Length: 454
Image 1 (cartoon, rainbow, N blue to C red):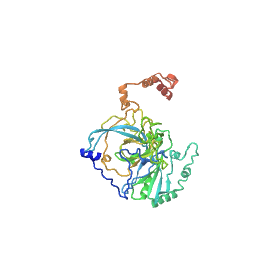
Image 2: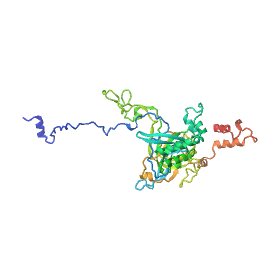
Image 3: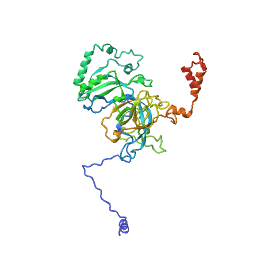
Image 4: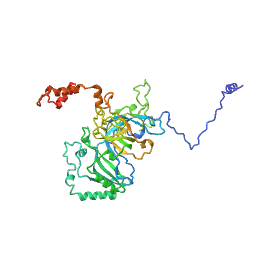
């Protein structure tokens, strides 16, 4: 008699399947587990450890390759984040769907007041890296740069550089000898520069000090002479960077404190009825080995990390003091770069500024470092010449309907504050007396009373 399996195979030949024997691998081949692409890990391990940055200012950890065919020049600059706005321009990119079409792009406004060079440092190449040989300082170092050397300026005796400035003329021969040592032994030359925070709307009076490498020049002597020629001089932003150039932005991101593993790493939430919470990692490790792997997502510090963003486009370089800084060939309205009411949490931009395409790390008022790209960019977006047609300067504290104060007053008429100011001026005492409320006309108290009345 046929077995049930054979009977089934005879009755239904299409159901019968031949079982292939198991093919064993050779002994020299081993099977290895692999990560499934349908469920990759959450978060990148390239940014470990995710902890708070030591320095508030972006640190230049690498500089572009030196090119002796170019004249001596600086490779970095420091600026302060003011805020964001948007621009309108016609895209010039043949073959793209946006070619000859208008595109609205978000831009970041950085205020970049001139920097001052106060020293030069020479570095010697060793098998273990660069080693600082000597430093030569300028005759005078400003107070805002000296404040960086003290934790508490008003409690200190303020003795920094006092002996140096007093004996500067007597040590002329020593300085020349140190400069000759740099020219003879060093291969890398950097200048010590600081920002001018006095020109900003900040409470801080302590300048940010950084070393900027000098590239270009046929010899090291050319670099040193160039650095010495900049002592105690203001170095404007447009002498380092130009419009339509690609730059790298180095800074510290916005801090968010101590956050959960779901916010910090983006892991998947567990099922809704999970016991003791669902915004967790289900299993943080095996029983044995009884340790926790470094790659397992955990809760902790999120934000305030040091980051470098490469290849940001410089859209525009201008002056905040220019009343027509935001005027273009297509938008002839005379308006500065500062929006109505100022940038939120920053205020007006009064010094030089630069527009960078896209976002920039950090919060408002945070210092960021701009560096020339490590590798020259040759793609079309980098070589494209930007011609802005419109720069938005509407208020960032409302719906943003008006671009200038004249446009707003023309539409809304005279406001209550202006009418009350005229009333105070008309009813003021003729001989320098007091106006309404007991305040002298035109005084700060009268203006404050007018604002409070409104």
